[in-house]
Each structure stands twice: as structure tokens, then as C-alpha cells.
Amino acid sequence: MTTARPEPDDFDAFWRGLAERARAVAPNTAREPADETGAGVVRFTSVDGVRLGGWLTLPHGEITSAVIVAHGYGGRSALDPRWAPSGAAVLYPVARGMAELSLTDGIPSFSKEHVLHGIGSRETYVHGGCAADVWCAVSALQEVLETPLGASRGGLRLGFFGPSFGGGIGAMAVPWDERIDAASLYVPSFGAHADRLGVSCVGSGAAVAEWVAEHPDAWSVLDYFDAATSARRLRVPTIVAPAAEDQSVPPVGQRAVAATVPEAYRTVMPMTAGHRSYPQEEQEMAAFAQATRTLFAGTERGSLQSR
Image 1 (cartoon, rainbow, N blue to C red):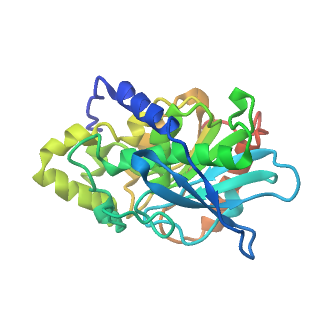
Image 2: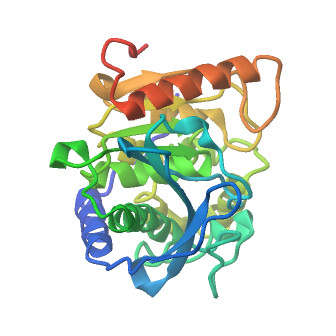
């Protein structure tokens, strides 16, 4: 039994307004030389003038698609090329406040503090800024490549991959950016707050649960940042990989994100567990990565099926 809260009447208006603000931001990209691995740092501007960083990798030869690869709560310490098809230009942006390229004055980098930053208002809550960072990362990649992104707009096909924190933020961000053609969300966080905050966990949800218990007025903010509510607005092919067991991100929230993606766009690839190793992990992740690459390459027709 779920305890879903009603959507705010102006949910769509709020998110469209935030997306419009982000699209109006000039990314003002600055590129740094690539290292020995071929990855170069890209600096760019997001909403509120925050300067962020990300790593850019380019294929040898023709660029045939583009991918934004988000990260989990805690930032990014390494690049993971599994999610990009051959021929893809890949930007690995780091969200505001996160290590190591986007540490931001005034925003704590520790997940249990970051998740509460600005929670007093929907206009200041950090997750709104993090969603805006996704849209600004798309603008930055478009500027760097000097070509339009979004197959629906006549540009390069653009995919978004997000794990955990990045999956939840992606569920919030993707519906409002027509440049993104496909999404893949791995053990996504921030879904069905009313249910997930009632489940014991060791992740950022524990900090939010404690805060809400003492500040119930925070629901008026959190209701705008529920990944399951946003996922209901997705209109691009989306793979969701929810875990049956996960001590960091309660599975009830992951399942809610998967369930609310409209059936016509939804492929669900269940995982045995999240945020830990297990015997089937390599096999499950290999299949999920292959499906994601196929989706992002635009060759998924007939090969992916909702279940």
C-alpha cells in the first residue's frame, strides 16, 4: 500500500519555468587539454552563475551521437564508458557542490548535508539546481560540439544515463528538455518520498527523514522534487533498473519511478541489489549496459520490450 501525496497544482509550471531559466543561461564553456586517457575537462556555467566542471570524451572518427552520464551521490571519481555507444561524444558533468570538479562555496559536498541544502524553499532547494545543471550540461555539450543536440530537433541523438542520485535527478530533468531523446536510470533515488522516507536506509534519505520529522512543512518543498512524479511526464524511451534490495536507496522509491514512466516509453530491467556487490551483478550490469548503449544509439526498435 502506498501513501502517495497529491501533486502540487503548479508542478508543471514550476518545472517549465526552471527549465526555461536554465535554457537561457549561456554556458560559456572553457576546455582544458585532454589527459593521457583522452578525457578533457570542460568548465561551464549553470543557473545562479554557478561554474561547474565535467569530463569530455570524443570518439575516434565521426561523432554519431551524444550522451550525458551523471553520477551517484558523492560526485565522480572515475569515468565509466559502458553507457555510451561507439561514435558517441560523452560529457560526464558533476553536479553543483559535488567533488571534484564542481565544489561550490556554500553548498556542502557530503551527501547527507547536500540533500538538505536550501530545503526551506522550492526556489532554493539544491535538487532544483542539480536538475538545472543537467540542462546546462546539455547546452555546454552542444556548444563544445558546435552542433545541435536532439534527434527530434534535427541534431545528434542525445541520451542521458543516471545512477542513484543521478537517476533521480535525471527523472526530474529529462521530461523538460526536448533535446534528450532517451534515458536510462539505474537504481534511481528520490522517488515516492512519502513511502521511501518511512523505510530505514543508510543513504541521504535518512537525513531527509529526520529533517521532515522535525520540519513537516518541508513537504511543501519535497512534493515538487519527487522523481516518481516527474517520471510520469517522461515521453522518451526510458530504461529503469530498480533493485530488489538496497540499503542506500529504498527499493520502494526505485519501483515507484519505474512504475510511473508511461508504459509506451518504459522498459524495466530489475536488479538483484543496489549499492553492493552480489554474484549476479556482472551479468545483470552487462545486460543493462548493452541495452542502454542500444537505446542511446537509436537501434533499439524491436530489441527492447517493456515488461
